[in-house]
Length: 184
Image (spheres, rainbow, N blue to C red):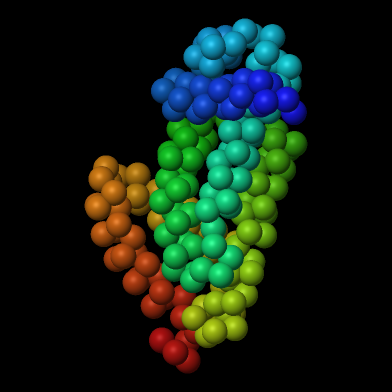
């Protein structure tokens, strides 16, 4: 993709995130295009419909979070990074969840995003299993669920310091609860 085309696509995704947060799923796509500083035609050249735009927003955010992950990092650091970085995306998903018309194809695409997150986590989770820091019955899907739960908790706190304090407390709880039973 040419640089100028990529810049317009990025502007559309930024604008969509803001507009969806402010007005929900039903926001006029013309408003998204205007907020991005482009015409409606540019929006439709990039995204076939509203759901394609929503999915692209979440795909980009997942990619950004993945870029920040340290594959050699600890499970705690990974959960903290993903929960902190993912809190705004969680808030957006919560905002849209009631309005999203999830037909079977859309549902499958969202499930594929969750699967991509699980794939990103797999080496970290497997290492935690091997090190005895995570019960083998806890897989990547359960760790994704933990991250989503923590992200939701973080939404109630404004400052980075408050969020960090909550993270420390919740990670200690999960760390104890996720340990293999022989270690707990």
